[in-house]
Image (cartoon, rainbow, N blue to C red; front, top):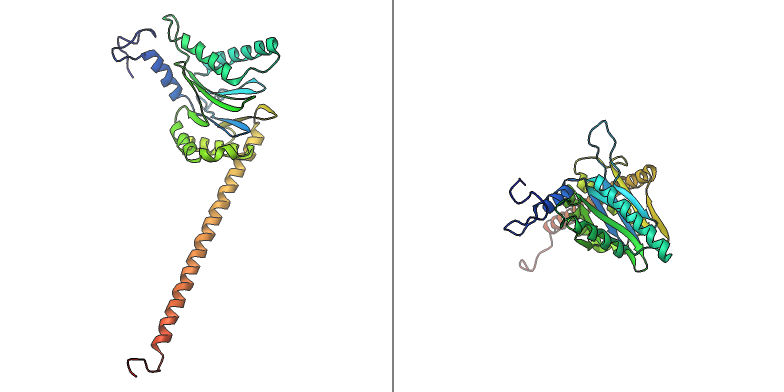
Length: 282
């Protein structure tokens, strides 16, 4: 993208019907490190790629607890994400104080989307440069939403945002039909596989990824590095077992093929060495 006469403020439309500053905010989300979400009948899992700006600094926090039943993962400008997370926490507290019940996930998502949309209609404001994946649980079950800087929002069974998210999306699209019946552990493993796809050549470890879970009778919690590392090790163990099974199956097929060829050759030699007269000779 490049500067032009139609991107001086967010309220100026281009002749093509575009708001360039909103598109720039959406591009900021694409430049951020990846965030992934997926859900089953009982749980929602969020996973993020943690990247530091330099070798001397620590990574920025990308998983935030909003309430016991809601949490978010973000991609883009984390400073904008912290502002939105504080707003979401305030809304949850106010709702619980007035109605003495948890705020429904869908209602909170709509409120955040409305807040983001206002920034696209005020010339003295700029859009939030952050995308959110909202995981929550209410009376209707687990939910996974995505909030966009434009004010749009959608509910998903599985989704990924941020840089290199297309590789994670490809994995999710290939496996999403099995997610609804998955257990909590299986869902976490799928999330880690998707994170690994977005990392590409980098090695997956508890230092460069984060995972959070919320489920029925389970409050939103961010997994500690020790627990996360145990899941990553189980992934490697399962991969090695699968490779061993595949190699064993290949060896069995090769041995069966050799036996079959040997049996065929013996049958030919017996026929050739038989001295009894054939029907033609008789």
